[in-house]
Amino acid sequence: MGVKDFLLLFRTLSLCSGTRPAGLSEASRLLPKDNSASQKFPYGKGYGDERCDVYTRGSSAKEPMDTQPTSTKDRLYPTTRCSNLLIPLIKYLMFMSNFAFAVLGLSILCIGIWGLIDKQSLIGDQIGYLGTDPMLFFIIIGLVVFVLSLSGCIGFLRENACLLRFYSAGMCALIVLQSISAIVLLSFREQIRDSVKRSMIVAVSRYQDDSDLKFIMDEMQLGMECCGVESYQDWGMNLYFNCSSTGVLSCGVPYSCCIDPLENGTVPNSQCGFKALEMGETTAGSTVYLGGCAPQLSLWLSRHFWDIAAGFLLVITIELISVSCAQRILGEVKQIKSMWLSMNQNQEQ
Image (cartoon, rainbow, N blue to C red; front, side):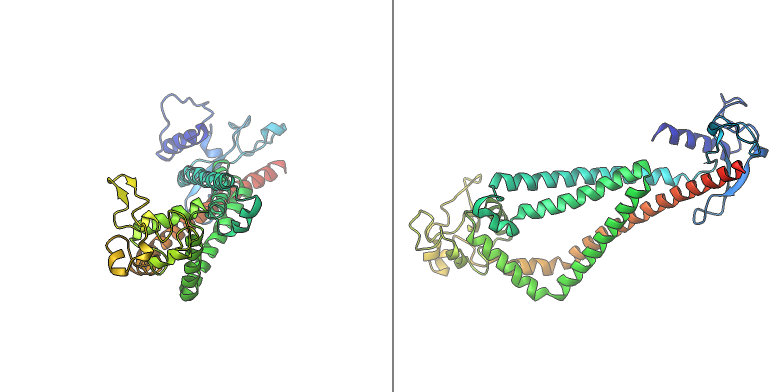
């Protein structure tokens, strides 16, 4: 909390309790000299029915409101005695939360850029596969999160109306996009399932050529205890695992397809799926998982549908609260500006 907010909180607690804190003389600049000279102003529509005392601060802070300014420095600056203590709380909570998300978004963005550079995905023949590169997804998500969070972080801290409007508009657009995506996912389940299958087929065929796709397939097969897209025979689509290949991986499957994928419990056993594609289902079933990952993924989504829906609603709720807080601070800024302009116009007259 800044020094200004601390003094405001200290003065508010002292004055609203009707007592003058020890150590403050009659000439203290924290307090107006004459209470009867203060004018009454409503704090603003939507901020309660209480009326707060408003006085000036600056070189004429001790003078009555009807005193005419003698110079530019004597212009009025509105200050409320019974200020809404919720505003500083909203301001700093939203600053800290948006700062954390800005750091998270920047980290995701850096990971995505590093991944593209490390794999040389932007040069040569690799650029043709950029659309299916998971690192591109990291870059887009990281960039959106970082830009929105940074604008909210600075906007709440500095009470900048322009940044707060940008933050509110961006969050509203994000809420609309997420809602439309949820509706599309529910309305076109079959088409999306087919699209996921095609993506998995691409991952199987490029397993040895793309380290990110290899990582995703290994994690999926280990976590869901599956192999391939529809069955373990799908690994025949891969150039290295196809039985026509002359390499050591010919007619085999990745170690992540194996029932016991680790050697001595620690090191991945790359030979555990050796010649699995030549075996019958009964023999291969004792070594590798026979079922594909597409049916397992559909089953997992069906079992955890309500958990996913609850998480989605929680995210939407947090985003709506963020927009509401931004609008509250914007309303406060507009109220203070309106009071400032009105009081200076009256004083100049």
